[in-house]
Every structure is written in structure tokens, then in C-alpha cells.
Amino acid sequence: MKSSKTISKPKGKLGVLLVGLNGAVATTFLSGVLAVRKGIAEPVGSLTQMGSIRLGKRTDHRSPMIKEFIDLAGLDDFVFGGWDIRDENCYESAVTASVLHNDHLAALKKELMPLKPMKAVFDQFYVKRLSGTHVKKGKNKFELMEQLREDIRLFKRRNHVDRCVLIWCGSTEIFIRPNGVHKTLRKFEEGMKKNHVDISPSMLYAYAAIKEEVPFANGAPNLTVDVSALMDLAKECSVPVSGKDFKTGQTLVKTVLAPMLKARLLGLNGWFSSNILGNRDGEVLDDPDSFKTKEESKLSVLDGILQPELYPQLYKKYYHKVRINYYPPRGDNKESWDNIDIFGWLGYPMQIKINFLCRDSILAAPIVLDLVLFMDLAQRAGLKGVQEWLSFYFKSPMCAPELYPEHDLFIQLMKLKNTLRFLKGEELITHLGLEYYD
Image 1 (spheres, one colour):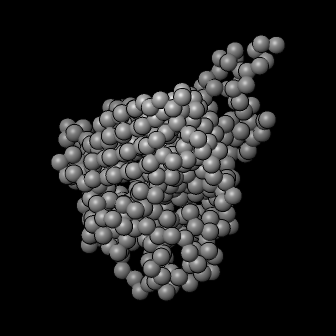
Image 2 (tube, rainbow, N blue to C red):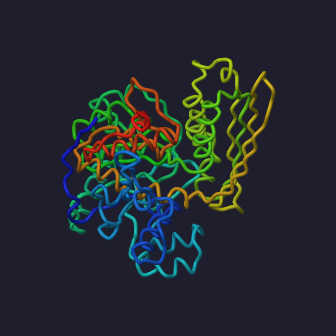
Image 3 (cartoon, rainbow, N blue to C red):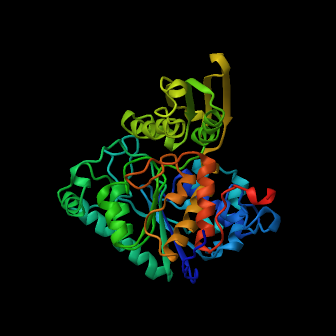
């Protein structure tokens, strides 16, 4: 199967707008991009910067770098901006976050100091463990959304930016179930004017971005752009959207290990997952309402991969528990433990134990970079609505309503690379390989 789409060239500057500009993830991403631009670090973990893609048969020996195969914006073309509830520059925030060493940040101080956030749309009802004074005021949510639209327009004018991408790097909001106010655009817009409680700040950012024809990606698990009204708006405005919840530590491991169990038809009795985390994300998740949102995201992965309805003897009755504990001394250096009780031939039990000492923002930063570049590519290629091919980056991937999400990391990577091949008119890779043995 060959096809190709017309992809406009990435001319001019690309605006990178981040919600939560002063947070650990955003400042780690900013610092990393600036360090790479200065030639003092490598973009480890970034598929767009360090990944290759096989083209044609294995015997063709064609495996260019992805950034050489398809037209992506250059890192030097990035112009940064965003919103936060704290009024401080990104250097101060990066020092406070303590993800990167001070000597590393010192080399970037000149570039980070001028980066300051615009006032954020924030309501403590949705993130109870945070508070801030650098926030917008308005008579209703519709007016606040309009202020965000004006921020985007002003950012473009001041920075002479041709295109933008907006990424939600903000904190996890409380759990909200989709309901009537989310069903149609008319009801959603009425809800904003009436300050409906089930329209959260993240939804206002998503609506504003789509109306300004800015691609939007949600890095948190909260209900945001994945509601009928905003999905319809994205199609209507021909804007790409993606989400949700950056796939970093423990869940990244699950989407590697669970496919192994399923592939070898090994049974599962239980999977107990525990985490300690001391950054602002950990503090937010210490609130039960915000944790419920994260829990739903993390719990959905195993069922999606193992498909107990197809394999009831192996996966119908397994017990799955996820815990996240706020532990300030650990900071951004998250630690997770997994105890996995499995069974094999004739039902004999076995165990797998994993202790992952990771750095949450270090794993998230390259995801932000790749999403910025791929979401911009999607828009230049005329793709609109949900970008399921970017599921590779998310714990709870968005997909069409009639589909189930694909969680398997390697299937996700195959889908992503095949999408790139499709866009460039290359043969899709199926790994069938029978032609080698004819």
C-alpha cells in the first residue's frame, strides 16, 4: 500500500505554547532543547531527533534518520511561551524544580531568564493542592477562554510566528465524567457562559487552541479534548489533537511487559504497582479527586493489552492495584515497585519484580519535543481530529469512539512509523517477509 499526502514546508518560526510553563516537565523540556541548540547535550529519548526509520525491504539497507526522511521544524525555529500560576522566570523555576543540576542550568541561564509565563486560567476546585496568584479574572469561563485566544494571537504577532502547537503540561485535574454539557458544541459554549462545573480549565485551553487553529496535545490524564464537542470542533476547524497522559515510568514498563505475557500466553493472577514521588505532580496526586483521574488512566492499560474477554482462562480474574504516594524528599526522582504474579504451563506460579528508579521529567521532556514536532507535521499534512498514530506517547491514547485504544508500545511504534511512511508515499512495513524465501 502506497500513498502520499502533500505536506507544506515548515517555513518560519514555530511557536511552542506550554500550559504549566514553570513546572518541572516544561522547564526540563525547555532546558533540554536550549542545551541541544547550543551543542552541549544530546536529545536522548527523542524519536524525532535520534530515531531512524526502515524503508523498503531489509535487503535495501535504507534506514535514514526520521528528521532527514520527513520535513520537521528545526529546533532553532522554536519560539517558547505559555501560561502558569506562578509569576517567575523559567530559570528560577528550573532551579526550584531541582531536576537538572545547577551547573547545567547555569549554562542556560541567559536563555531561560527572559522566559516568563502569561497569566493562567486556574481554579483550585479542579487542582486542590495548588494555589497561585498569577491567574486571569473574568465574569465567566467563556470570557476566560476568549482571553486565552487573545494571548495566542498576541504571542503570534509579537514573535512573528507562523505556526503554533499547544501542549498541556499542567497538573492533573479532578476526575470528571463526560456528560450532557460535553456532547455538542452548542451545549459546551452555553456551559462556558454559565460556568458549568464540569468544564475545567484544561478544556478552555483546548477550545481556545482549536479555535485559533493551533494543534493541541494533552499530557495529563484529565478529561479535556476527548469530549464530543471538542472532537467535533477539531474536525470542523481542521486541527489535529492528541492525548492523553504522557507515558513515562511505570506505565511505560507495563506496555512492554504485558505484551510479552500475552504473546507467550502466560497467565496473570495479580499486578501490584506502587510509586513514591516528591515533585509538584506527586503533591497534586495526593488529593483523592486528582488521584482518581490518574488511577483511571493507569488501570486501563492492562485490560487494553491483555483483552481478558478473549483470554478468560488467563486474564479474567487478575487483581490490579496502583498506588502513588507523595514523598517530598524524593523530588522528581520517582521510584516504582511492581510485584507481578503470573502462571505458566499447567498453572504453575511464577513472579516478576521490578524496581524502577526513574526521573519523571527526564522521561517526559523528549515526549514533549516529539509531540511538538509531530503535531506540527500533522497540521502541515492536512491531518485533523484525533492523531491516533501518536498513541506511542500516551498512557490513555485517544481513538475513534468505535475503537478500543492500542496500548502495546511496539504496535504503537509500528503505527507511528507506518504513518510517516504513508505520508511520504513509501511502502508500509508488515514484517511478513515471505518474499525473501520464494
